[in-house]
Structure formats: C-alpha cells, structure tokens
Amino acid sequence: MILPLLLLAAAPQTAPQTAAPAATAAATPREAGPREAGPPAPTDRYAHCMDLAANTPAAGIEEASHWRLAGGGVSARQCAGVAYANAGQLTAAATEFEAAARAAEITKDKRSAGYWAQAGNAWLAAKDAPKARAALDAALAAGTLTGLDLGETYLDHARAQVASGELEGARGDLDQAMATASTDPLAWLLSATLARRMDDLPRAKKDIDEAMRRSGDDASVQLEAGNIAALSGDEAGAKTAWKRAAAIAPDAPAGRSARAALAQFIPKPAR
Image (cartoon, rainbow, N blue to C red; front, side, top):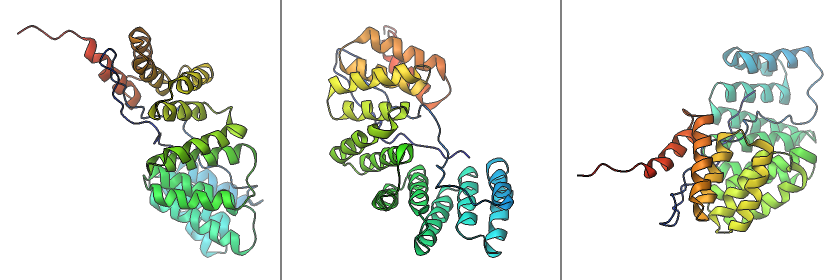
C-alpha cells in the first residue's frame, strides 16, 4: 500500500560563495503507505479488498466499488482510497478517504480521525496543500489519535504548512511530532531541512546528525547533510555527503540533485 510522501519542506537554497549551492532534497528516507485508521473491519471481504488494492489496484478499485454498493460502508471507502493511491490517482484517493471520514463521523466511529489523516496524506501527495491542511486539521481536532499515528499526522501537517509558507507553524508541528514519532528518520530530516530554511544552522546540524544516525544509507539524508555542510562553509563535508547521495541513488531525484551540486567543482575548460 504505497502512498508517496513528498518532502515539501526541502527546497532549493543558495549557499555562500565559498561553498557549493545547496541542492534540492526530493525524496524521503522512506515511503509510507496510508496509515491504518483504527482496527480494520473483521471481515474476509476487507482483507480481500485490501489485498487487491495493494497488489492489483485496478481490481481493488472495482472490488471496493461493488462492496460499497453492497453496503461495505467506510471500510469499502478506505479500500477504494488505498487502491486509487496505488494506482496513482491521488485526488480520487483523497476524495475516498474524506468520504470515509465523514461517514465515520456520522456514526461516531473513532476511526474518522485516521481517515482524515489518510486524506491529508493523499492531498499532500497530490500537491494540494490547502486541502491537505484542512483534512489534517480535522484529524488533529478529533483528539483521538495517539502514539505514532499522532506524530505522523503532525509531520504531514508540518509539510502542509511549509507548502503554504507558514514556516513558524511548521516548526511547532515538527516539535509536536518529535514527541511520538522521533523514531522516524523522516521527522529528523524534515526538521533539519526546515531549520536550514529558517537559517538555524545549529538546529539543522543537530537534526541531520540524528537523521544520519538512523538512516545514513538514504540518499535524501545524505543530500541534506551536504546542503547543511555547504551552508556552514564545510566544502569537504558537502562534497563527501553529495558523493554518497549520488552513489546511493544515481537515478533518483536526490542523486541527480547531488550530482548537480557537485558539478560546480568540475573545472571549466579554458577558452
């Protein structure tokens, strides 16, 4: 059940003249599927539908539609959302998750907050920050999310805030997320990236070190480590991190950004 998470907090930055320009982080330490919105419906049909949604999305969409017409309710809607997400139809996925959330609210089903969180995650992947923020606001307002689910929702809310230019609000969200999602390397990467954008290099260095410790073999983490080193005037450290990012994922966005940053060190032929 793969639903891409876009690293909206990472944006191109220009380093001082004495160091390489910071590149753009365009991938995450992990891809996260839609979070489970509470315990699944205890039916064989739910398991069957979700299996199709994960492995053959087109069949999952069809099965979810038939199940919904047969009275599958919010569980059928959730399955449809997962299937659409895996089919790359992110707007449709978000719409289904929102429908599940609203239906759950009517019946006082506590899973509604999780469905709102899934909708927000899908809207982020669809690059619609205002709708993502609205859905995530609803998820947090419910007051029923706990533990990692709560932390991950704050992470997504921070990303929506960044996309809307609300950096101070995003900082507060990330600090909230750290309380319950500090084991997630993405939390540290997002926090480091945001700190860099807010010119808080001590915080950026501290948080990227944590991200490196937890997921040093991820190209996005190495890319951001290079960005922060460059802005700190550490040319050697920037080169080392960017070379590592390019080696880990040469064809991924993070690897391409790292190569672009490194290209400035190649001497230009004399005319």
